Length: 168
Ligand SMILES: [Zn+2]
Image 1 (spheres, rainbow, N blue to C red):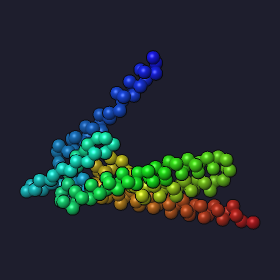
Image 2 (cartoon, rainbow, N blue to C red; image 1 turned 90 degrees about the vertical axis):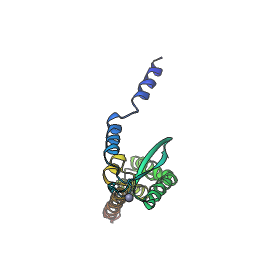
Image 3 (cartoon, protein in one colour; image 1 turned 90 degrees about the horizontal axis):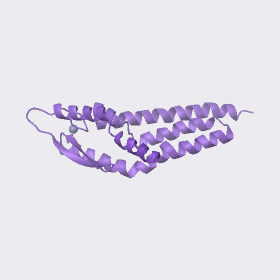
Image 4 (tube, protein in one colour; image 1 turned 180 degrees about the horizontal axis):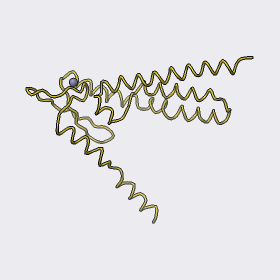
């Protein structure tokens, strides 16, 4: 009985009213191209492309056919690489954490950095808010830069500390 009520509570909490309000406000005031974030001009009208994501359909404005294709391509790419992304973001870090716990070797921490970095480079998902604020194009670049920074930091720390450990 108690278990049932818990489940019901969870279901009603899934909608985030603030988030939805923000997106609807933005969309109703000024159509921005979802890819390049250009504003709609007075003498042009942005069209919308509909993309189904996680069983939900969402509409995105685009300024040109080219950018419509880029938006569609990204979501196809994102679907294709989702599993590899989760591998680097969740599965590999968990196994590295287990290895860390077993061996007590701190080098595994830096490998976690590298794995997370690879995940973000492969699929630079910075969240809907960042994409709404920057446009998809810039948020992908930003995500890849962040991923690269993580990888570089991870490799640097790994080499520095690895040399300490392997010193005679
Ligand atoms: Zn555009």
